Image 1 (cartoon, rainbow, N blue to C red):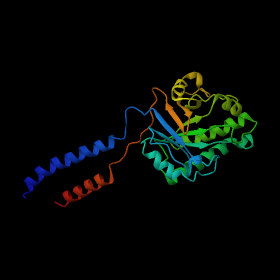
Image 2 (cartoon, rainbow, N blue to C red):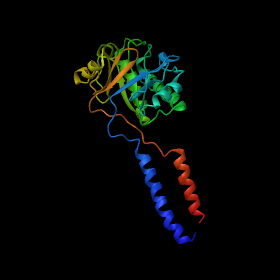
Image 3 (tube, rainbow, N blue to C red):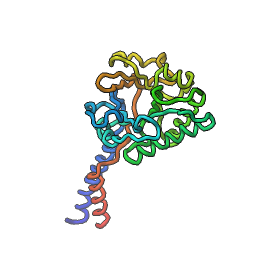
Image 4 (cartoon, rainbow, N blue to C red):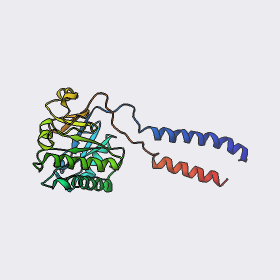
Length: 257
């Protein structure tokens, strides 16, 4: 084939492949977020997982800070089918001195993110929630507990991660004395049904002064409702390996002509 005729053919082929690559790059950014999901963690190890949800939240600890969910990789694979994966870490303060509480929370978040990032995709582009519940050990010093939580928030934010808090008004009051952290979204549990969970999407249900973004009800599994107007991050995905290889091969071929 003559060089001029070859180039007339190659130009539209390259243009078509470029358009296909651009379409693949933008396909991961959904304009509207999903509305219903599930969360699972160590209690589901060895058990059945929910059907593929609209979004998924996976716990990275084994119930307490500085422990590891042994099923994280398996649960991440389940969550990945939804296309939107979030994480949560457990929190506590087992009597840490007030002066050290911030550093304790900072270190707990560092451990959780490091453990997850070493095994699955868990960094920027994923929401992380702090599970703040009275079932774990907490100091009687509510200011120290609040400082502990602030340390975890600070570490995750320093890594480009968006942070929210899971708790209830009662538990938040017992642990922090009702601390106000209006910049952090709330994930509110306690509903008995999907409809009731949706009704919790009001400012009156906020325990920390932050916006209520997600609510929860429980049957066989934990089900999570995304509040109206809230969208979840869906990181852009690179071209598939097959497309990337095709583009690379074509460019190599062209450069040799």
